Image (cartoon, rainbow, N blue to C red; front, side, top):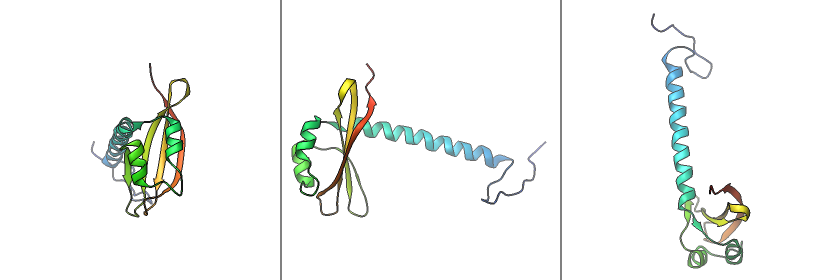
Length: 123
């Protein structure tokens, strides 16, 4: 039977034929990669008590070196702007895990922090 000639969609995507299958294959590959990378990042985070995080990290005054000396290495992402994000996990109530995210500015000083419960540990 063969492929039908198809009109182009305004976005330039074929409506019939091989284009659709390749698009879904690409979407599937991206979802698979995203799932793998997210899990690995959470596993690599260092687990620190929440009280220690709150005492150590002070926006506007704590530096990268102070945080590293007190809490150790963590999962981190560095941006071209010089900003850097570090993430630690902490044990939260009822078997859950929380994440504590620290944003350092280009000068190496803490700009913002965010914390919250992110997932429950399976027993």
